[in-house]
Image (cartoon, rainbow, N blue to C red; front, side):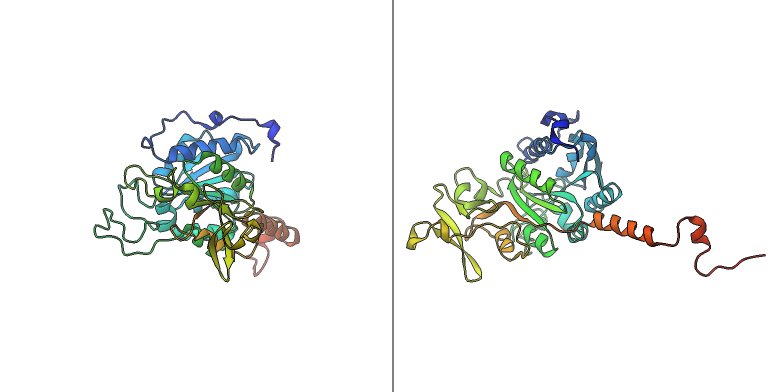
Length: 340
């Protein structure tokens, strides 16, 4: 990759000439701004970026980026992104998707892209609703929610994005809030630098069909006490007064208050995003309010072989050791006969 000093961009350099058509107040605007800001920190020439999307409000994203892009079909963004990265490993490939696009019709592609550990960056906008098609419940909608397709409340248990990623052998998972541009930018930079599939769940607000769905934890007055921003190598502390923390109590995580029963920061869990065993990371990703604060930041970031690199190495090895060097060698190999 090129060095940063050779490619110094501003966020404006990544803005296309297309009118942004998301609803006023939609969380997608903040995600777009965060991504455009993050790209300026990567030192990669613009022609090396490709944004792939499926179907949904979030999937308009490629139109608003002055990079290469592909607005694909419903649920198939991961498949297209996989093909793009495999065909041209030098590209920085970003998949833009929503909770419906990725986890319903696209669920199979989603988990297998993660399992294969293809070096793509997946940003999953989670507003817990189908926005583009006007308010049906989605795979992440809370049980009991009343929507146009669940007028008496859905009886389904929702997916946990982090649980799904870890279960699919994911090596990178992070979570952010749409309106927190600074945190989001930092996470997107880390996701881009990670070699392998990175999944970033964005708690995103749909002002029309599911307004304030995350407000119980993201609201300005409560977010410090109801979320925790994890930082690798640092104790797990949160709260408006930084007076709360997380400890391991047997096989469970426990919320404690500093000072109670002599508890200090030395007693708290220290975040290890690079631990290969996902046990604690799994619990962190699954924490829910009111029992726990919701975990933000990079929760898991583990190095591993990537699909496209292993595939390229396999091809080189086969080519090197194969007796077949050209088409003529292939045509006269195996069971052949000569017609006089």
